[in-house]
Length: 251
Image (tube, rainbow, N blue to C red; front, side):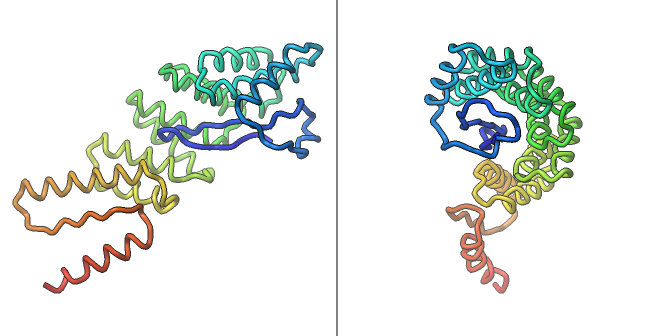
């Protein structure tokens, strides 16, 4: 019943929209309709203020309220709720891992990157095959300049079958750019777009890398015909490009 995943600047964000009273794991298949973050916040507040909750239910409602705060942009309040849920040690190992991951995202967004790395690491200690945590830790390590460690996390994330390979591929492209390896960066961005043709971040970096290559050719007085067309990395765009490119081969 846990997650709806998205991305902000290649940062995996999870949000729990289920607002049913805390249940045992056996009952978690009975999913109620989704609610807005504001509704989730109000319901969690109501449950917490009512009292008489078990330690586990208290922690789960703190997590739900923290996620609602996170979605609404109230990151300090989210941090407080996640920390209270974690410190209670009442959650299952899987839920504790999720909550450490959620707090890591909040810390990341607050610019507390070293602390975020620690939370992603703690989440991975409880669940070693947590692909999103590997990817987010890789992002944080990359921003800290720890490129070798970041690369290891991205590679591990892909190796265990990350369902969104565009994200670690994008991170690997960023590392390649930082190391002055534009050809490798292009291949990683292409792999990201092959996994998700609508992934705008990779599209933007691929265009930027190609423009740098174009500028380098111009600086060396190499004759070429630049063609830049609107659209994403899709078959219809490739088809238009092929139609424009093929005649140039026979001039």
